[in-house]
Amino acid sequence: QSALTQPPSASGSPGQSVTISCTGTNSDVGGYDSVSWYQHHPGKAPKLMIYEVTKRPSGVPDRFSGSKSGSTASLTVSGLQAEDEADYYCSSYGGSNNYVFGIGTKVTVL
Amino acid sequence: EVQLVESGGGLVQPGGSLRLSCAASAFTFRTYWMHWVRQAPGQGLIWVSRINGDGSSTGYADSVRGRFTISRDNAKNTLFLQMNSLRAEDTAVYFCTRSASSFAKPFDNWGQGTLVTVSS
Image (cartoon, rainbow over the protein chains, first blue to last red):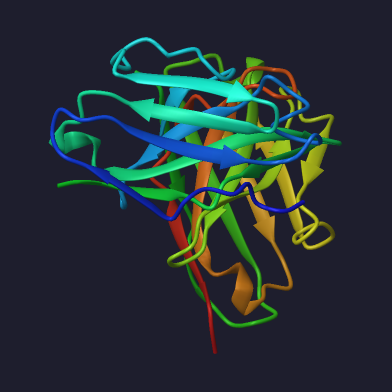
C-alpha cells in the first residue's frame, strides 16, 4: 500500500494559520472516516492530535482542527505557536488489516 | 498516566535476529490492540504489525510478513516483536503504540521508540 501524500513542508508566522493536506485513495482516506493526525517532535513519542477526521483527544488545543473531502484530508493549525513546530503525519486505515501513514510534513514557525 | 517503554534495540548484522519488548503500564493492557510502527532515518512512519487483545489475531505489513512475529504476554503487560532475517532496510526506530480493540481506531499513545540498526 502506498504512503499517503503530504507536502514536505509548511510554515507560518506566530499567530497565523497553516493547513496540511493528506491525499490518499478510495481504498484508504476516501473509504473510511478513520483519518488521524500525529505530531512528532524528533526523539519524542508521537502524539495523537486528531482522530476520526475531526475529533480532538482530551488536552489537544482547539487550535488544531481536521476535515476531509473525498480522498483528501486536511489538518489546520490556527494561531501558530512556537511549540507547534514539529513533524505532522496523517494516517488512515487501509482495509485488509492494513494501516497507512503519510510521508510527513515539517511545520516551521517563522 | 499511560506509559509504553520500548527496549531491545541495537546493532545487528544482516541476516541476524533481534527481539524488541514494550512494557506497558497504567492501563488495562489486555483490552487494547497493540502495534509496532517504525521510522527509518530521515523517513516517515510505517505501520509494521498489530496484535489483538488476547493474542489470537495478528497482522503484518508486506515488507515484514514471514520474517517478523508479534506477540504479547498479558500477565506481564508486555508486547514483543521477534525480528528474524534482518535486512539493512529494517534499520529504523521502532515505536510501540496502542489502539482500541477494533480496526480503524487511532494510535492514541506511543512510546519513545528503540533504535534498530542492521549493518555489517
